[in-house]
Image (cartoon, rainbow, N blue to C red):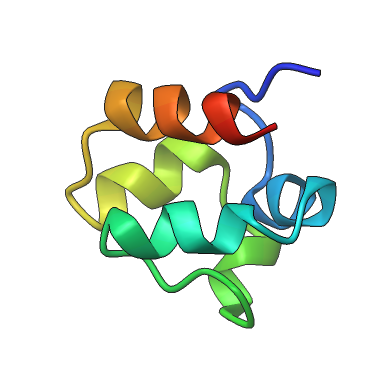
Length: 63
């Protein structure tokens, strides 16, 4: 499975428990955040001023 920018953050976190650490490395504390249920990866990256492409690359390396 490939993670894409239009996936909900909560769905990504459900794929693999190690993905939370990837979000943390990018300065995002998504696990337990109410926004994780409502935001796509792209929306969350924009809100946290995170490089979306770098985040996607790191997340997909982990799955």
